[in-house]
Length: 303
Image (cartoon, rainbow, N blue to C red; front, side, top):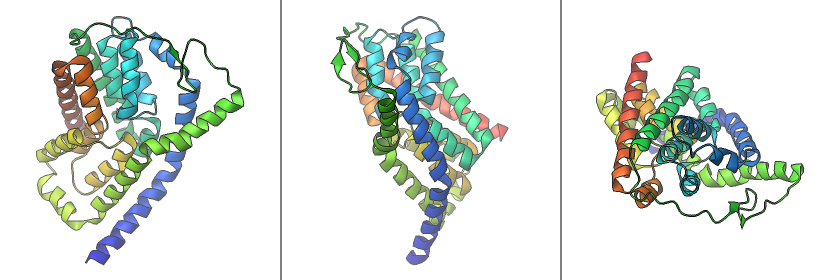
C-alpha cells in the first residue's frame, strides 16, 4: 500500500514538475529584469501623497514585484520611514506577496485564464480596500524616522552617491537575482509546495477528507485558517490549491486559500505589531480575512 502511494506521488510530482518548468523559468527571468531595471526611488516617489492614487500605485507595483511577504517587509518599513502614508504601506504588504509574474504564469498553466485574471483583480481589490482602511486610521507612532541616506540598488550600501554599473553588469546582476538569489529565497518553499501538492493528489485518505468535509462551507474555514497560520509563497501555493480543487474542494475555497496564504507570515505579524501597534495589526488581519472569504465565495458563484 505504501509502495502504491509512493508511485502515485512520484507520478504526480513529475506531472507538476513538467508543467511548471517553463513558466517558472520565464517568471524568474522577468523578475530579475524588474528587480534590476526599475529604480526603487521611482516606486517610493509617488507613495507619500494623500488620496487613492498612492494606494493604486503601491498596489499595482506590489502586484508585479517578485518579492515574497518576507522580502516586502524591509521595503515597507523603508517606505514608512520616507514618509509614505499607512494606506500605501498596507496596500503594498498585501499586493506584493499575494501574487507575482511567476505565480500568474503558473496559475494560468494549471488553473486557466479566467482563474488567473480573477486572482490579479482580487489582489488589486484587496490592496486598495486595505489601503483605504489604513488611511482612515493612524499608526500607534506617527513620527517618521529620519532617512539617513540613499541605498545603492546594487550593493545595498548606505551612500549619498549612486554607484555606476555598465549595462552588461546590470544584465548579469538581473540574471543572478532571477536565477540564483530568488530561487534561494523561495526555492525551498516552491519545492515543498509541489511535494505537498503531489501528495494531496496521490493520497486517497486526503481525497476522501476533502470530499466528505471540505467540499462545502467548511472548505472556506479550512482555507482561511491554514492560510493565516502557515506561509506558502504565491507561486508554490498555486499547485497546492490545484491539488485541493482537483480532489473536491470548491474553487471558491481554493481561491480564498490562494489569496490569504502568501500574504501572512509570522514576520509580517511581528513587524506590523512593532511598527504600527496591535490595533492596526488586527485591522489588517480582519481586512485580509473578510476580503479573501468574500472574493472566494463570489468566484464560486461566477464559476
